[in-house]
Length: 79
Image (cartoon, rainbow, N blue to C red; front, side, top):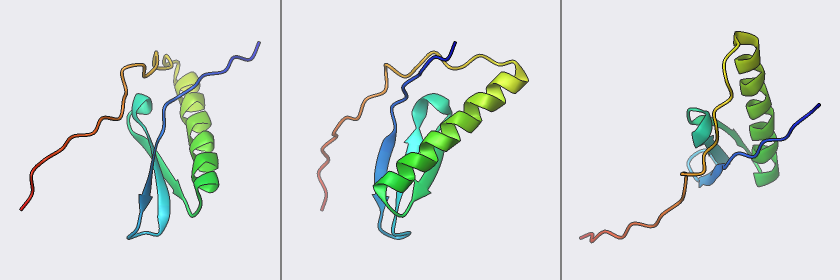
């Protein structure tokens, strides 16, 4: 029986590389990129599947999840 898992993904624009970069905190910071948001997300989905398959082959458990991951805003004085 197939099951589904959801992972939080950080999606950021990298102006130096002119691409979208993704990071999956729950999977050890797994990261990939794409020239469009959709491409970056598709590459991320493929990378997650590959990561999970490698865990399965090695007999390792899939991480429990990333419920504690959140994006927070921090304000600092500059200048």
